Image (cartoon, rainbow, N blue to C red; front, side, top):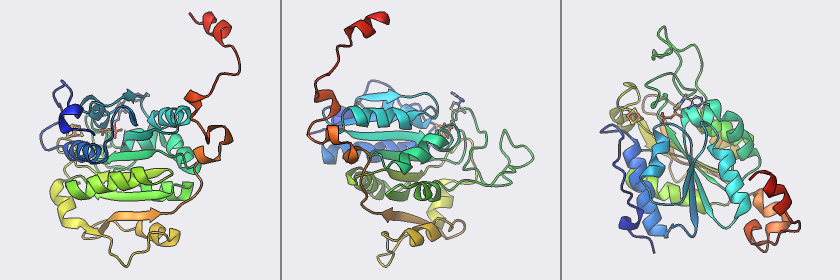
Length: 284
Ligand SMILES: Cc1ncc(C[n+]2csc(CCOP(=O)(O)OP(=O)(O)O)c2C)c(N)n1
Ligand code: SF4
Protein backbone atom coordinates (compact mmCIF):
# COMPACT_ATOMS: atom_id res chain seq x y z
CA UNK A 1 0.00 0.00 0.00
CA UNK A 2 1.28 3.48 -0.84
CA UNK A 3 0.24 6.46 1.25
CA UNK A 4 0.45 10.07 0.17
CA UNK A 5 2.97 10.73 2.95
CA UNK A 6 5.24 7.93 1.64
CA UNK A 7 5.68 9.87 -1.60
CA UNK A 8 6.64 13.15 0.06
CA UNK A 9 10.24 14.33 -0.27
CA UNK A 10 11.96 17.05 1.80
CA UNK A 11 12.48 19.17 -1.32
CA UNK A 12 10.34 22.28 -1.82
CA UNK A 13 8.55 22.38 -5.17
CA UNK A 14 10.16 25.12 -7.25
CA UNK A 15 7.87 25.33 -10.27
CA UNK A 16 6.34 28.77 -10.99
CA UNK A 17 2.94 29.25 -9.33
CA UNK A 18 0.24 28.12 -11.78
CA UNK A 19 2.59 25.88 -13.82
CA UNK A 20 0.83 22.91 -15.41
CA UNK A 21 3.44 20.63 -13.86
CA UNK A 22 1.57 20.82 -10.53
CA UNK A 23 -1.40 19.02 -12.06
CA UNK A 24 0.87 16.30 -13.45
CA UNK A 25 2.60 15.83 -10.10
CA UNK A 26 -0.72 15.62 -8.25
CA UNK A 27 -2.29 13.21 -10.74
CA UNK A 28 0.76 10.94 -10.67
CA UNK A 29 0.83 10.94 -6.85
CA UNK A 30 -2.88 10.11 -6.72
CA UNK A 31 -2.37 7.31 -9.24
CA UNK A 32 0.56 5.93 -7.21
CA UNK A 33 -1.58 5.83 -4.06
CA UNK A 34 -4.49 4.22 -5.89
CA UNK A 35 -2.36 1.56 -7.58
CA UNK A 36 0.19 0.98 -4.81
CA UNK A 37 3.20 2.06 -6.87
CA UNK A 38 6.22 1.96 -4.59
CA UNK A 39 9.94 1.23 -4.64
CA UNK A 40 9.36 -2.51 -5.02
CA UNK A 41 7.47 -2.18 -8.30
CA UNK A 42 8.05 1.22 -9.89
CA UNK A 43 10.94 3.26 -11.29
CA UNK A 44 10.93 6.77 -12.73
CA UNK A 45 13.25 8.16 -15.39
CA UNK A 46 13.28 11.84 -16.28
CA UNK A 47 14.81 14.11 -18.85
CA UNK A 48 16.30 17.56 -18.30
CA UNK A 49 13.92 20.50 -18.05
CA UNK A 50 11.35 21.88 -15.63
CA UNK A 51 9.42 18.63 -16.16
CA UNK A 52 12.39 16.58 -14.93
CA UNK A 53 12.24 18.20 -11.50
CA UNK A 54 9.18 16.06 -10.82
CA UNK A 55 11.39 13.20 -9.68
CA UNK A 56 12.67 15.41 -6.86
CA UNK A 57 9.12 15.76 -5.55
CA UNK A 58 8.03 12.11 -5.62
CA UNK A 59 9.80 9.69 -3.32
CA UNK A 60 10.22 6.74 -5.64
CA UNK A 61 13.39 5.27 -7.12
CA UNK A 62 14.30 7.60 -9.94
CA UNK A 63 17.01 8.56 -12.39
CA UNK A 64 17.54 11.77 -14.34
CA UNK A 65 19.06 11.09 -17.73
CA UNK A 66 21.03 13.41 -19.93
CA UNK A 67 18.86 15.85 -21.87
CA UNK A 68 16.83 13.80 -24.35
CA UNK A 69 18.05 10.44 -23.06
CA UNK A 70 15.40 9.38 -20.56
CA UNK A 71 13.84 6.86 -22.96
CA UNK A 72 16.96 4.70 -23.52
CA UNK A 73 17.57 4.87 -19.77
CA UNK A 74 14.04 3.57 -19.17
CA UNK A 75 14.43 0.85 -21.82
CA UNK A 76 17.60 -0.34 -20.06
CA UNK A 77 15.82 -0.47 -16.70
CA UNK A 78 12.91 -2.38 -18.20
CA UNK A 79 15.28 -4.79 -19.90
CA UNK A 80 17.12 -5.45 -16.62
CA UNK A 81 13.97 -5.95 -14.59
CA UNK A 82 10.98 -6.47 -16.80
CA UNK A 83 8.64 -6.75 -13.80
CA UNK A 84 8.91 -3.04 -12.98
CA UNK A 85 6.50 -0.27 -13.95
CA UNK A 86 8.78 2.13 -15.77
CA UNK A 87 7.70 5.75 -16.27
CA UNK A 88 9.46 8.40 -18.31
CA UNK A 89 8.84 12.07 -17.52
CA UNK A 90 9.94 14.08 -20.51
CA UNK A 91 9.37 17.53 -22.01
CA UNK A 92 8.47 18.38 -25.60
CA UNK A 93 12.01 19.65 -26.10
CA UNK A 94 13.61 16.72 -24.33
CA UNK A 95 11.45 14.11 -26.09
CA UNK A 96 11.02 15.54 -29.59
CA UNK A 97 14.18 17.57 -30.24
CA UNK A 98 17.27 16.13 -28.56
CA UNK A 99 15.50 12.83 -27.81
CA UNK A 100 13.47 12.46 -31.01
CA UNK A 101 15.46 9.47 -32.20
CA UNK A 102 14.83 7.59 -28.94
CA UNK A 103 11.13 8.41 -29.02
CA UNK A 104 10.78 6.97 -32.53
CA UNK A 105 12.79 3.84 -31.83
CA UNK A 106 11.22 3.23 -28.42
CA UNK A 107 7.82 3.30 -30.13
CA UNK A 108 9.00 1.17 -33.06
CA UNK A 109 10.20 -1.54 -30.70
CA UNK A 110 7.07 -1.30 -28.53
CA UNK A 111 9.03 -1.24 -25.28
CA UNK A 112 6.67 -1.69 -22.36
CA UNK A 113 7.22 1.73 -20.78
CA UNK A 114 4.97 4.73 -20.09
CA UNK A 115 5.91 8.10 -21.49
CA UNK A 116 4.52 11.11 -19.62
CA UNK A 117 5.08 13.94 -22.07
CA UNK A 118 4.88 17.37 -20.40
CA UNK A 119 3.98 19.34 -23.51
CA UNK A 120 4.24 23.08 -22.87
CA UNK A 121 5.27 23.82 -26.47
CA UNK A 122 8.35 25.72 -25.30
CA UNK A 123 11.73 25.20 -23.63
CA UNK A 124 10.79 26.19 -20.07
CA UNK A 125 13.96 25.61 -18.06
CA UNK A 126 16.16 27.53 -20.48
CA UNK A 127 13.66 30.45 -20.34
CA UNK A 128 11.44 30.33 -23.38
CA UNK A 129 13.08 29.22 -26.63
CA UNK A 130 11.04 27.55 -29.40
CA UNK A 131 10.59 23.78 -29.16
CA UNK A 132 9.43 21.28 -31.80
CA UNK A 133 5.92 21.87 -30.43
CA UNK A 134 5.94 25.67 -30.83
CA UNK A 135 3.47 26.79 -33.49
CA UNK A 136 4.64 28.20 -36.81
CA UNK A 137 5.15 32.00 -36.75
CA UNK A 138 5.26 32.12 -32.96
CA UNK A 139 7.68 34.70 -31.57
CA UNK A 140 9.85 33.28 -28.83
CA UNK A 141 13.22 34.19 -27.37
CA UNK A 142 14.96 32.11 -30.06
CA UNK A 143 12.57 33.08 -32.88
CA UNK A 144 12.13 36.87 -32.55
CA UNK A 145 10.83 37.15 -36.14
CA UNK A 146 8.47 34.23 -35.67
CA UNK A 147 9.08 30.48 -35.79
CA UNK A 148 9.76 29.26 -39.35
CA UNK A 149 9.11 25.62 -38.57
CA UNK A 150 5.97 23.51 -38.44
CA UNK A 151 5.34 21.83 -35.07
CA UNK A 152 5.57 18.05 -34.65
CA UNK A 153 2.46 16.23 -33.47
CA UNK A 154 3.89 13.71 -30.97
CA UNK A 155 0.91 11.34 -31.14
CA UNK A 156 1.05 11.20 -34.94
CA UNK A 157 4.78 10.61 -34.81
CA UNK A 158 4.44 7.86 -32.19
CA UNK A 159 1.58 6.25 -34.11
CA UNK A 160 3.59 6.17 -37.34
CA UNK A 161 6.54 4.71 -35.47
CA UNK A 162 4.56 1.86 -33.87
CA UNK A 163 3.38 2.98 -30.41
CA UNK A 164 0.41 0.97 -29.15
CA UNK A 165 -1.20 3.37 -26.65
CA UNK A 166 -1.74 7.08 -27.27
CA UNK A 167 -3.61 9.48 -25.02
CA UNK A 168 -3.91 13.23 -24.59
CA UNK A 169 -5.07 15.12 -21.51
CA UNK A 170 -4.93 18.74 -20.31
CA UNK A 171 -2.97 19.21 -17.07
CA UNK A 172 -5.99 20.88 -15.47
CA UNK A 173 -8.07 17.68 -15.62
CA UNK A 174 -6.90 15.88 -12.43
CA UNK A 175 -9.28 12.93 -12.56
CA UNK A 176 -8.88 12.29 -16.28
CA UNK A 177 -5.13 12.69 -15.99
CA UNK A 178 -4.84 10.20 -13.14
CA UNK A 179 -7.02 7.69 -15.00
CA UNK A 180 -5.03 8.17 -18.21
CA UNK A 181 -1.73 7.55 -16.41
CA UNK A 182 -3.11 4.34 -14.92
CA UNK A 183 -4.55 3.15 -18.24
CA UNK A 184 -1.29 3.92 -20.04
CA UNK A 185 0.75 2.08 -17.43
CA UNK A 186 -1.56 -0.95 -17.43
CA UNK A 187 -1.29 -1.18 -21.20
CA UNK A 188 1.44 -3.58 -22.29
CA UNK A 189 3.57 -1.69 -24.75
CA UNK A 190 4.91 1.76 -25.60
CA UNK A 191 2.37 4.16 -24.12
CA UNK A 192 2.42 7.90 -24.68
CA UNK A 193 0.41 10.36 -22.60
CA UNK A 194 0.68 13.83 -24.12
CA UNK A 195 -0.19 16.33 -21.41
CA UNK A 196 -1.13 19.85 -22.48
CA UNK A 197 0.83 21.67 -19.79
CA UNK A 198 0.76 25.48 -19.75
CA UNK A 199 4.07 27.22 -19.07
CA UNK A 200 2.59 30.28 -17.38
CA UNK A 201 5.88 32.19 -17.38
CA UNK A 202 7.17 31.89 -20.95
CA UNK A 203 4.14 31.12 -23.08
CA UNK A 204 1.11 33.35 -23.40
CA UNK A 205 -0.63 31.34 -26.13
CA UNK A 206 -1.31 27.86 -24.72
CA UNK A 207 -2.68 29.09 -21.40
CA UNK A 208 -5.00 27.32 -18.96
CA UNK A 209 -7.85 29.39 -20.38
CA UNK A 210 -6.93 28.44 -23.95
CA UNK A 211 -7.09 24.73 -23.17
CA UNK A 212 -10.24 25.03 -21.05
CA UNK A 213 -11.97 26.70 -23.97
CA UNK A 214 -10.66 24.56 -26.80
CA UNK A 215 -10.40 20.93 -25.71
CA UNK A 216 -13.17 18.41 -26.27
CA UNK A 217 -13.44 14.81 -25.06
CA UNK A 218 -13.38 12.00 -27.63
CA UNK A 219 -16.83 10.43 -27.52
CA UNK A 220 -18.01 6.83 -27.03
CA UNK A 221 -18.54 6.56 -30.78
CA UNK A 222 -14.81 7.08 -31.40
CA UNK A 223 -13.02 3.80 -32.29
CA UNK A 224 -9.63 3.90 -30.56
CA UNK A 225 -8.59 0.61 -32.14
CA UNK A 226 -8.55 2.21 -35.59
CA UNK A 227 -5.16 3.44 -36.72
CA UNK A 228 -6.77 5.51 -39.47
CA UNK A 229 -9.18 7.20 -37.04
CA UNK A 230 -6.33 8.01 -34.66
CA UNK A 231 -4.22 9.38 -37.50
CA UNK A 232 -7.06 11.64 -38.63
CA UNK A 233 -7.67 12.89 -35.07
CA UNK A 234 -4.06 14.00 -34.70
CA UNK A 235 -4.67 16.61 -37.41
CA UNK A 236 -7.34 18.35 -35.34
CA UNK A 237 -5.98 21.35 -33.47
CA UNK A 238 -7.17 24.89 -32.84
CA UNK A 239 -10.28 26.71 -31.74
CA UNK A 240 -12.78 24.34 -30.12
CA UNK A 241 -11.18 21.35 -31.76
CA UNK A 242 -8.40 19.90 -29.63
CA UNK A 243 -9.39 16.30 -28.91
CA UNK A 244 -8.46 14.73 -25.57
CA UNK A 245 -8.88 11.12 -24.44
CA UNK A 246 -7.53 7.80 -25.65
CA UNK A 247 -6.61 8.17 -29.33
CA UNK A 248 -5.31 4.66 -29.88
CA UNK A 249 -4.93 1.40 -28.02
CA UNK A 250 -4.11 -1.98 -29.52
CA UNK A 251 -2.37 -5.10 -28.26
CA UNK A 252 0.85 -6.03 -30.04
CA UNK A 253 3.81 -8.08 -28.74
CA UNK A 254 6.10 -5.91 -26.64
CA UNK A 255 9.84 -5.89 -27.06
CA UNK A 256 10.28 -7.57 -23.67
CA UNK A 257 7.69 -10.29 -24.36
CA UNK A 258 9.71 -11.48 -27.34
CA UNK A 259 12.96 -12.07 -25.48
CA UNK A 260 12.86 -15.75 -24.54
CA UNK A 261 15.51 -15.46 -21.80
CA UNK A 262 13.38 -13.19 -19.62
CA UNK A 263 10.02 -14.91 -19.85
CA UNK A 264 10.42 -16.94 -16.63
CA UNK A 265 12.60 -14.57 -14.63
CA UNK A 266 13.79 -10.99 -15.11
CA UNK A 267 17.39 -10.53 -16.19
CA UNK A 268 18.53 -9.44 -12.71
CA UNK A 269 17.44 -12.83 -11.28
CA UNK A 270 19.30 -14.91 -13.85
CA UNK A 271 22.71 -16.33 -12.97
CA UNK A 272 25.70 -14.82 -14.73
CA UNK A 273 27.15 -17.31 -17.20
CA UNK A 274 30.52 -15.62 -17.27
CA UNK A 275 32.78 -14.50 -14.47
CA UNK A 276 33.01 -10.75 -14.95
CA UNK A 277 35.25 -9.98 -11.98
CA UNK A 278 38.40 -9.71 -14.15
CA UNK A 279 36.69 -7.32 -16.53
CA UNK A 280 35.20 -5.23 -13.72
CA UNK A 281 38.58 -5.06 -11.95
CA UNK A 282 39.91 -3.18 -14.98
CA UNK A 283 37.56 -0.30 -14.24
CA UNK A 284 38.26 0.01 -10.52
C1 LIG B 1 22.70 17.95 -24.43
C2 LIG B 1 22.02 19.17 -23.89
N1 LIG B 1 21.54 20.07 -24.77
C3 LIG B 1 20.90 21.16 -24.31
C4 LIG B 1 20.75 21.35 -22.97
C5 LIG B 1 20.07 22.61 -22.47
N2 LIG B 1 18.70 22.37 -22.09
C6 LIG B 1 18.37 22.06 -20.82
S1 LIG B 1 16.71 21.90 -20.61
C7 LIG B 1 16.45 22.26 -22.25
C8 LIG B 1 15.06 22.33 -22.86
C9 LIG B 1 13.98 22.03 -21.94
O1 LIG B 1 12.77 22.04 -22.61
P1 LIG B 1 11.73 20.87 -22.42
O2 LIG B 1 12.35 19.55 -22.63
O3 LIG B 1 10.56 21.17 -23.27
O4 LIG B 1 11.41 20.95 -20.87
P2 LIG B 1 10.68 22.05 -19.98
O5 LIG B 1 11.77 22.81 -19.31
O6 LIG B 1 9.85 22.91 -20.86
O7 LIG B 1 9.89 21.22 -19.01
C10 LIG B 1 17.64 22.48 -22.93
C11 LIG B 1 17.73 22.83 -24.36
C12 LIG B 1 21.25 20.38 -22.09
N3 LIG B 1 21.07 20.48 -20.77
N4 LIG B 1 21.88 19.31 -22.58
S1 SF4 C 1 9.25 28.09 -16.52
FE1 SF4 C 1 7.28 27.36 -17.30
S2 SF4 C 1 7.43 25.12 -17.29
FE2 SF4 C 1 9.08 25.93 -15.99
S3 SF4 C 1 8.23 25.92 -13.92
FE3 SF4 C 1 7.85 27.95 -14.77
S4 SF4 C 1 5.80 27.83 -15.67
FE4 SF4 C 1 6.52 25.74 -15.35
